[in-house]
Each structure stands twice: as C-alpha cells, then as structure tokens.
Length: 382
Ligand SMILES: Cc1ncc(COP(=O)(O)O)c(C=O)c1O
Image (cartoon, rainbow, N blue to C red; front, side, top):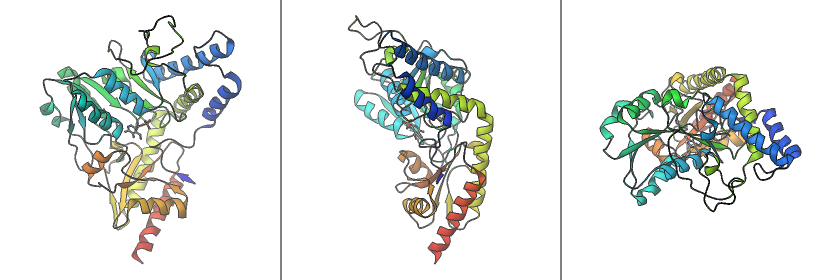
C-alpha cells in the first residue's frame, strides 16, 4: 500500500513511537499525578518529559504554557471559547478548516462575530487585504499556517507584523506545519498556537496541544480532577493542570516524545526539502497529463507536502476509489473538512483528490501514482 494521506494523520509511525506506546502500556501503566506510588510517579515523568520536549521543539518556550489536548480541533476550541467574549470580533481567512470556522460560527450566538478575509483562487492570502477589515472591536486574527487542501503557506510573518502593530492577538492553526517547518512562537509573535501530535510530529492519534503565550489569560472549558489542590471545589489556578482535568492519554504522549525525537533526528530542513521535492515531482508529472486540473500555487517553495487535483469529468471520489482499489494508493477525496477553502479555489461542492506526503514517502511511489492517474485518463478516454 502507498500511503499518501499524511495531512489526515501521518503513517507509518516510526518504530520508536510504537515502542514508546507499548512500553508505557506494558511497563509503566500508572495514572499520572494520581498517586504517590512508583507507577504513577513514572507516568508523571513521562508527561513532563513530553511537555519539555515539545517546549524545546517550539524554541524553548515555558512548558507550563503547553496544554495537552486530544487533537488540534480541541486545542482550537479551547483557544476560541476560553479567550473570546461577547462583543469581540475575529478576523480569519477563507481557507480555514472547519475546526476554526465551526467554533467561530457557533460563537456568533454568544455575540462574537468574525470576518473571513477572501483568499485568491489559488488559495493565497494577500496580507494587504487585512488592515481594512480590522474593526474597533477586532481582538484576534486566527489563521492556518498552511492549507490542508492546497498545501500553500500563509504569509505568517506579514500577518504577525500587522497583529503586533494593531495590538491584536494572533492564533495560528499549525495542523499542517508542525514537524515540517520550524515554528518558534516567540519570534513569530504568536499568542496562541494549536497543533497536532499525530500528523507532522509523527506521534499517535489522540495527541495535540495548545501553546498560550505567558501573560495571556484563558478560561478552562472543562473542570475536574487534576490530582492537585484536591481539597478545593474550585479548579486550580496553576498552569497547565488548570486546563488538563481528567486522565491523560499517557501512552499517546509517551509515543509523541519519540515522534518529536524522530523529527529532530531526521531534521526539519531535510523533511521539508524531501516533501517539497516529492510535491514538485508530482506537480510536474500531473501537469503533463491532459485533462488534469491542478489547484493551489504551483511553486513547491510556497507549499507544504499537500497537493490537490481533479480529473476532468470524473468525480474526485471515483478517482480516489480507483486509486485505492486498483492500485493500493491511499489519497483523500472530497471537501477535506474545509468547504470554504474549496469555495475559494473553485472546487466546491465536489472537492478534489488530495495527495499528502510524509517523510517516508519515496519518488518511486510518486511515479507509481502519476502512472496510475495516466492509466485512469486513458481508460476514461476509451
Ligand atoms: C488545517 C487543519 N486544521 C485543523 C485540523 C484538525 O486537526 P485534528 O485532526 O488534529 O483535530 C486539520 C486536520 O486535518 C487541519 O488540516
């Protein structure tokens, strides 16, 4: 099987990640922070170690400001709903995932409004479109770092500069760039950063995080047992446990530390260059086939490891089905939980075929995909 759906979740997971999860389940087993016995102490040190690894990875941020969540989606919900108040206005883009757009939509009933900045038909955001849309009650700019549909990168440096100049908070959805591009929240002036553990960081599913810049206050969305200050009926004030009630996905977090170590061993630059090379190869191969529609900017330097295409007059789900069943190639078709992005690039309501590579994909696999698509085209012509 050729796995080309790394934007959904990365696969295969490296052996140390699998071994880290298994070791936790087999040899550690305790509930972190819930007792003084050895298994619970060892479990706590696993969580601390993963938090510290991620803090180092993000440019030596304060580990207490990293809040573990089960996914990017939960991290984004925590950011929006823990931060915003009635009367606030949010600026976002027309390329966002539903994990940004749906919470913002539901917050409308609480008096929180938002505006989507229109992006171009290739999914690109022009940062000069942003300042005219800032209102007196705009509090936050929320945008993805890279599109999960076209792969194109947003102009984060320019957007961060505008946010800083205008005194606005900046929330970045790094679902598609964590583990692929160095993101140092302090140097980008990012106030909140939401990311997955299970995509570019190569960790298990059920892992994610929200980083919150020191000094920024947030309300917890759920309360309960933290293993600390148990005498009080109130949620503790201390970070990170204020936001982490309930039992952790400790086996997943044990695996995540190994995923981060693997990324550091491979090297972010090497991963990025490899993925860019694979997307460039695919872009070149597909653009030589008649009847292929490519979406997004064609320059791989402007993209991460995802590419969307369609075969003229063939539904994208049919293409994905043939690739899966006849060629054992796993790609994702449809709207990719990002209907606004598909409206922007002109592929709504059917969507596109998305190919998303990871650090272990090879040129040979990309050649096999191009060949498979060329055969689908030939078959369709007959
Ligand atoms: C841009 C973007 N944001 C958010 C998410 C949600 O991530 P998660 O699956 O970790 O909740 C995704 C998932 O694909 C995504 O691509």
